[in-house]
Image (cartoon, rainbow, N blue to C red; front, side, top):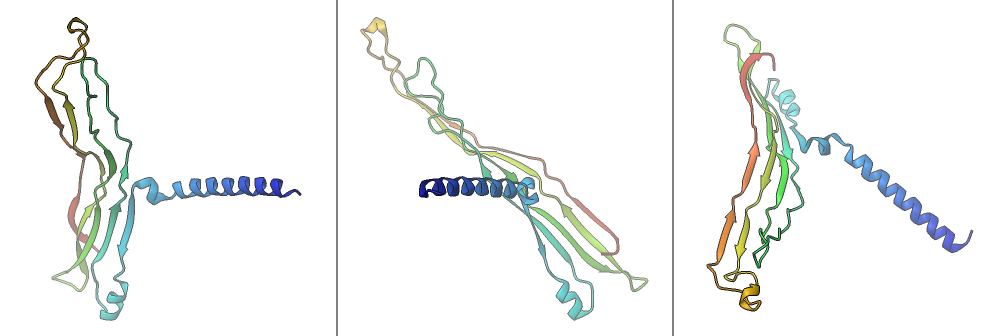
Length: 174
């Protein structure tokens, strides 16, 4: 086999392997959910103290920035609208699952108090800026020269969209 053929074959195999790895990495549950589950291991404390200890789990968000909506050219303005575009960021609010034992007064069994606040979807837009020059567009009636006008500036407000929920309760067992 010629060296150029071997090099081409190696490049193709490397590209296919990289594509397969990217597809496999995208199919993981953490990437699909937008959060990373984290459990706090307290089993050793429970065994060493011979008692019930709280159970704690969290979900940490993965923030993914999106593509900004670029400047828009508007007829009659010298500068484009949204000179500094807003940057969208998608992710999730952190989640929490906590169960703490409560001693049961009449007997030796344990009841629990729990907080369950699952991760909630989050969509944000960073603030943006829209400005216009203190000149009008070129005017053919004025020999192609722009005319003066008041400058304009505006701040595009940031956006935060989410629906958070949670549950606080007590019950038997841990």
